[in-house]
Length: 98
Image (tube, rainbow, N blue to C red; front, side):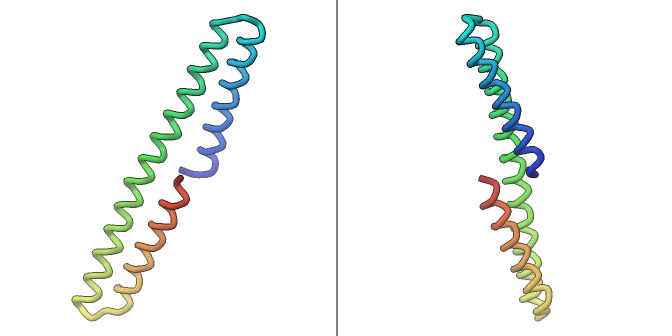
């Protein structure tokens, strides 16, 4: 999930909060409920993007591990180092995915 996606979800959430607050102040239950729905939708999209990124990062880690092991088996230090680097990059991306 890129920064653009995070900003988009945050904007959708803020829009929902604004609608909900406006609905509460004006006594408009429909607008209040619409705001809550918008917030729930933004949270669901954010969660889906995080899940997608988690799966992608797990795949990157696995690919790196395969490269590391293949390098160790074939005595190719370059491949082994690249594999370790890929794994670390995937770990960092997953950490930032929170």
